[in-house]
Length: 370
Image (cartoon, rainbow, N blue to C red):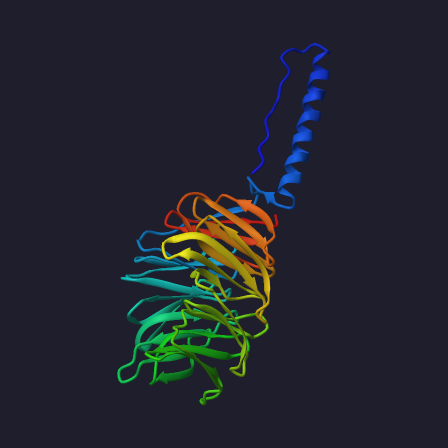
């Protein structure tokens, strides 16, 4: 971050103008030298467009992106915020382990291990629905489809997809592996990862059909998370590698972590990004971005701990430990640095340049493009 100082002349004599002119020339020279050192990196110490999110009472706060806004849940309240930081819907609740997911169309809220979930909408509407078993995972895609993983007696688990109005559209009961994660693409494709003693399977469905469309197996590994990239390719991470799988269930590419440990990831938008570290307790981190074909767009090593990643468009926002964040291009060229303040642990970047920093102290939004 660059700083400036104000200089005043010691006297009002006419000769002070020469002194002031010399100082100005010196300041310009220093500024040009600094710019040459940092090259294309910009530093933003002040944002005109900064919105704070006013959270209600409760503990165990959790957040999810909701378009350019935010979904937030505590043990006592659930809230949905607009892109300007205004609370547009809320409800008092009693949740032992609050969790949420969101999109621009709605926020979804549930108590992990309990049946049922709630939805909040930008017009202030609140809806609730029962489920045939306890909920332990939920996701909302950009078209408002809600994917839920449930416990179900007699099965390893159950997957349900709901419309934006909470009407059930699809259901699949898992018999050979435990569902770990599930997400639905904007074109109504569903992928469910299941885990068993022999490894993981990726099950591909269409929500308008009952039969499974494709299956991709990963022996000896557990899929930790998955999501669809913008071109429809599925990106999935295990502890050992990043996998890119086509819609027909065939492998497009894989990138092993080569002995490094997966630390953070983002698997949505036009590219995937992962942070890997040299040791289980941290160490040097390697940031890597890849396109849907598995080609490396950028890679850089840092000695800072990565807390959170978020991608949108062709940019990646990284939150580091120590109250520092950096916005990169997809090839990991540095663009902007920003200090969000103490206690922030999550970042959410949207395509319009808005970024939300969230943590125990609350949440604040800035606009990198303002």
